[in-house]
Length: 441
Image (tube, rainbow, N blue to C red; front, side, top):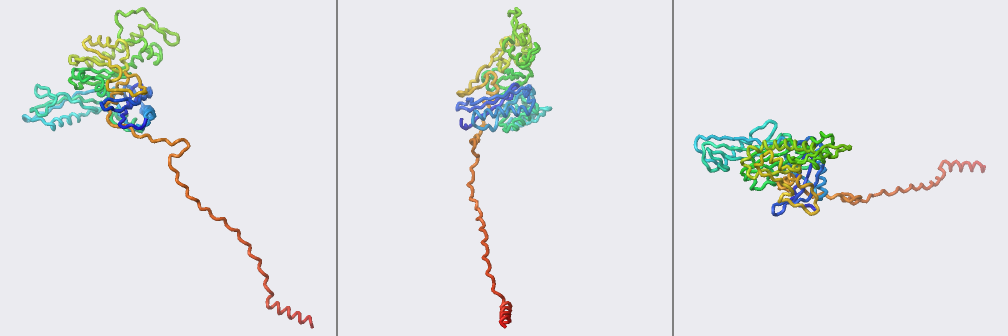
């Protein structure tokens, strides 16, 4: 695949694995999934919080490398979800008193927003502000601009989280050589994807049952009213089953094969045996009691956060997440809620998500958070992949070699011609002449 324009990359830091997905927005606003990758990350993320920065960075790097290979592009930035145990909502009220009747303007409302944003929470910071209704006298209004009042009260739901939560995410993304396009509030994105406008308006609770945590979001009149993260999930059920002296992997398989969230009183209890490792057996009823007890605890905690809104939840409860893949979950919720609320389990792909031909993804029921983050992305996250040089070739153009001037070889010195002997000197000639004269005499 060549380089594409406007490819969105979303990353989910889940308790069991780090997952990444790439998608391209269609003209109708839907998203087509182009690639998916995940990396198992045991003992890396706990309760939705980064527990080991180095291992998380390594897993994130490997996941993104897989996307690079599948897309033939280079991932530069990512949208990443913020969740975890410390994420919760806090209600806050801001009151303004005037000397007389005051015409409310946008400036007045902005001042109340600023006052709310200035609230300091110990070891935590505001991640998102959700305005609620404004109260003028005995009236509740959504938009008070243009009205007159002597006093106005603004209600806000502040989504807060531990300060280190986002800091650690940014550290890991930066260490992996990436940029953070935006950190999104996972439960809010999930509600925007899984809940219909009618469900939000009529009143609905979204319950995401994950491996380590269960997140509860309550909507009434199309406004988020409450958000909390319960530190219990499917892995707690698996951990309880290990009390039968089995390993975690075997406990997970037993949960999937024999577990149930609700055992009716009329159920056949004939002492049916199930096989365990090392040629052991155990009563199926005992295993189911363990699973049912833990689910009952999780549901009781969920109901604790929903009960005060039950009269306003006309469309009931929507369930999602990997831990909802257990038989008789709806009956277990009905027992806790007294059967007063409708229940729906969100399954399969969201309506505005499609999968490109040939792309393999994980189980759709486990990816609702990842799909939601993908749909929330807006800016391009990739660039052109630099082409690697072919094997045995250079990644640059060699310069033409300049000819080297070789020095001419030195010529051997020619021997000097022998010197001609010089004639006899004048003295010698005179002496010889004299000698010849004497000899003649």
